[in-house]
Image (cartoon, rainbow, N blue to C red; front, side):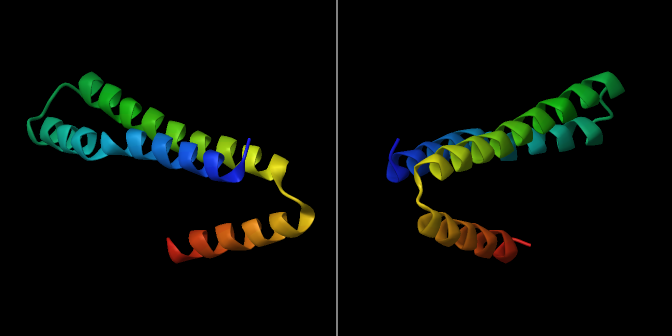
Length: 90
């Protein structure tokens, strides 16, 4: 697998999964405001959590695929870029 393709697959997967999050969060808020049944709220929270897990797993899986094709020098550069990206999101 080439690096560009792996990165594109990650971007597409995360975009697709993330697209539903605002609506799912809004639905949860409406449920809470509307005093929906606790079990319904729990199910919605679990749906949101599953999507968050899927997003993180897509990231981990893609990172491992990318790691498989990198030389040691490229891997060091890739890890530095990832660390920079993570620290800028904190």
